Length: 117
Image (cartoon, rainbow, N blue to C red; front, side, top):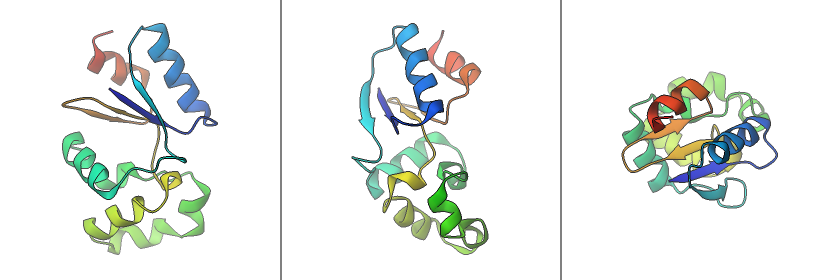
């Protein structure tokens, strides 16, 4: 499993602590230092079954600076994926990537259900 996060993010810290408390092994990846590729993002998006807009960090400074709230609805999926791949800080985190699932953000109940805890 891959755990993709921004180490300074408090939600990411909570998620990481939860993984460790539940003895769930994972591969750690800093989203700022190792931005997801367009191919990874597309695969995760397709696997997640979620709308692509869920992958955007809507509370982030970059999202607001680029005025994406107004621009995203007019952008194609291809354009959105290309944009997400330019800056890890645009991507909602943490991401937990399994073989057949993708969890976006940390909702403890959702994680418990998916990971059988």
